Image 1 (cartoon, one colour):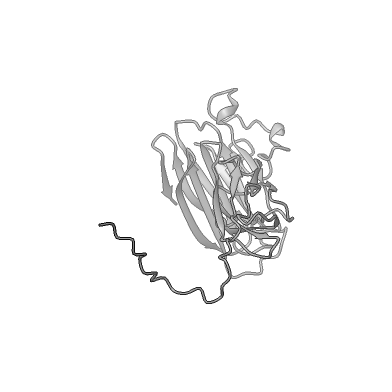
Image 2 (spheres, one colour):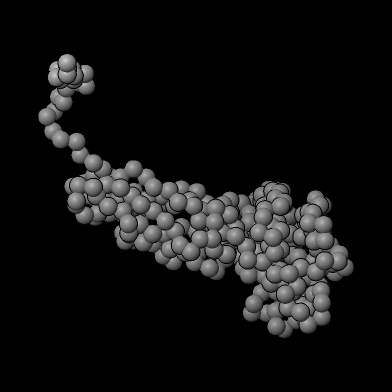
Length: 267
């Protein structure tokens, strides 16, 4: 015998009598990914978002919900599905969030995507500080070099792209540019970042990382300014430390980098 009885409906009654309405769907991406700071750019992509109800997407709300410590970047402005150019100023992860709105006024659930900012150079030293108007300068001293020496100390006076041609910053193997340093950014009035990098560091000796509280450009109005230094070896954050620095013209040794062993030593 075939049972033809209809099963009892145990679902709750539809009190409104209205059909279920589907929310729009935010679809997010970022490309290219990864990128190298501080000059390569990426685009946040939301053009594949859609409304299952068949309506149009009328608003794309992109926001940055997480950035590395010390970063000062923001999401490019606008209302377009795609946002560019986005240029990370520091190494680390940047998380973008997209919420879209349909023409019927419904908002999607958030969609999140992570952009990885990875140094292109094998040795990457970056610095930022807490308070503006207190100029901090990053120095990287070559193995066997001395502080403030215009050949063996890479800093704002000799190592920026505009100035390095004036000085013989020929570190490591003679005539080989891959083991020479470069200071990409020098920030005076803000909070950084500053970074010094070397594509292919020399294997003998140890590099020294120094922070100088520059005298004369801005008033030293703080009891102490918290300065953070991050050191990346082969694209990986190997060492980080934050230290309070006070007093104009103080010279503060932070770390020693032994490239041959891949180690960083506190100073």
